[in-house]
Amino acid sequence: MISDKAYIDPTAKIGENVTIHPFAFIDKDVEIGDNCVIRPFASIVRGTRMGSGCQVFQGAIVGADPQDFRWKGGFTYCYIGNNVTIRENVIINRGIATEGGTRIGDGCFLMANSHVGHDTHLKGNDVIGNGVSVAGEVEMGENTILSSGAIVHERCRIGDWVVVKGGCRIGSNVPPYVIMAHNPTAYFGVNAKVMAKNGFSEDTITEIAKAYRHVYQTGTSVFNALRRIEEDVLPSEERANIMKFIADCDLRIVAISKDLS
Image (cartoon, rainbow, N blue to C red; front, side, top):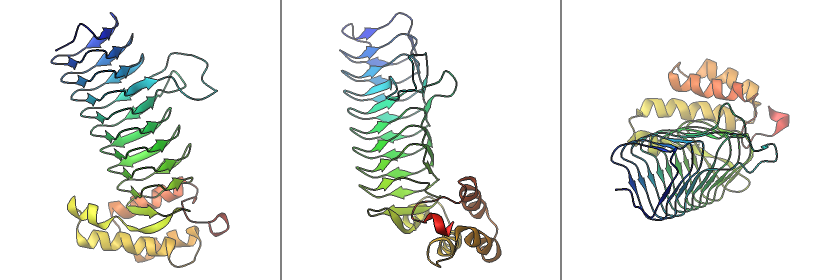
């Protein structure tokens, strides 16, 4: 069902079985995949490429102009995967350069009043809580949860299977499989409960916890912690993911001071 009270630019490409409610706005050069639902007063702005099975709720703006002074008005992109839910008043900015762009992976759920900045990449199956602010050029892994009111600063990286508790301010990189809490933000433990519900074995979770004891609870430098992990933690995909993430971030992670890295 496409309402005659919605505005749809003639250049927009609309898939099959798409519902567009009254007073929705579909801009030029927008592509919307099959089986999507665009609710009243939602706006899909130029340069947006939306997959199938997505839902966009009232007042959301997908592909909004970047909020960055480096953007000079060029044509840029926002890519939305399949089965993404974008709740009320969410704002997703598109990229600031012609190449790249903002990318929201399959299965993500963005709750009301959250904001995702330009060129941010959500890998997939992430949950962005009510009122969360994610700045530009953030990289977020799979199956990660940002609880209500969290703030993520520009160019931070967050790993897979992370939980950031409500109200935290993330100003550095968060390695995979952890929970972060408090202000200032600090390591709160391994995301064991969520991981166990999703098929991680008890032995795997134990080895992950052992790795993070070396990183966060021994008082050694991050460099030495990585050496200890290599010696003390059984080889696994998870161990490799932890070590690669920290190394790729030049040993700069949340709640570790620079003089310990």
